[in-house]
Amino acid sequence: RGRLRHARRSRRPRISHPRDRRRARPPATMSGSTPAASSPARANADAPARDGLGAAAKAKLKGLLAAAFGSSVTTVRIDVQAPRLTRERRQRKAYGGWGDAPARADGDDGFTRGGITSHNFSVEQTRLQVKQKWETGLFEQRRTGGGTVIKSRLDLGAGLDVGLLRAEVVPDLRVRCRLGNGDNAPSVYLRALPEREIVARARIPLADSGIFLALRLEVPGRFIAEGGGGGNPFTPKPVIAAQLVRPSGTGPHLSTGGLEFDETLLRIGQDCALRVAANLDFPREYPPSTGSGPRLDVRNFGVKFRKRWYEERDRKKAEENARRKGRGEAVA
Image (cartoon, rainbow, N blue to C red; front, top):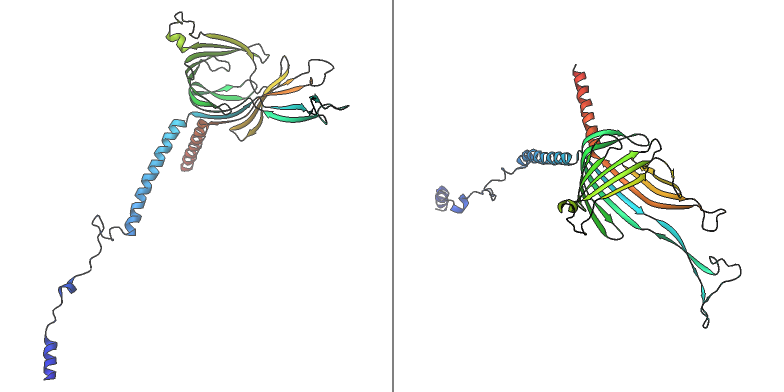
């Protein structure tokens, strides 16, 4: 009987529980896609598309910058005006009792035992100038003193002039029109900042002396708007000025007090230069007395950085043309 019961039990069909029929389903993502849809292969397939969009955006931004600055010039200047090294003498005082007389010894010159000497460095002003100039109608022009320079017929300039010691900020916005290609051709400025005015400038060479007569006419915008002032005594009037000048970079020149020069001391690369403008005053009496010898007066000492972006553009165009020409000759 035991064997028969065991055989009957083994012949009964096994019925599985409904829970056992459940199959493990793959987890679905938020968008309803399976992990196979976001597999590494598909991610790698989408990477070129994203890289293509990034490259297109970079190329577009590069094109916009090239269009905005391709024909411009950036100038940054830091000028230290009137730097001076001075010597100050202060005598020691004898404060014993009621006396207030200087304690001088025999043979004391005031700079050794009987006085205190201090050396001071003073600066009148330190200026930072940042200017951006967009040029059109570029042409090559001979520079006074030798060499050539690239100039423009029409340009738009904007920038800031910042006084670091006195916290002064002066904006600059103007349009300049050159009326000729000559080195001394007159120019007309339409200035909007810091003041609205029309400025005309010209230089007339005096024979071959290297001296020029600089003429300048300034007409305030307020004078034009009020129809010549209209009898208002506070309306600024036009100003005409004439001055004898020498171009910078032409070497030392004689002046009424001695020698004056405005030269480049050192060039740092192609776009940066160290400049100094100074006077060397001669003694005015002979024999010279103490403190009346030659004196060096530095008017300006600064660093100037000027980047001509159109030169970079022209260089790339020339290289591209050379490559195309080389490819054409290779094919031929």
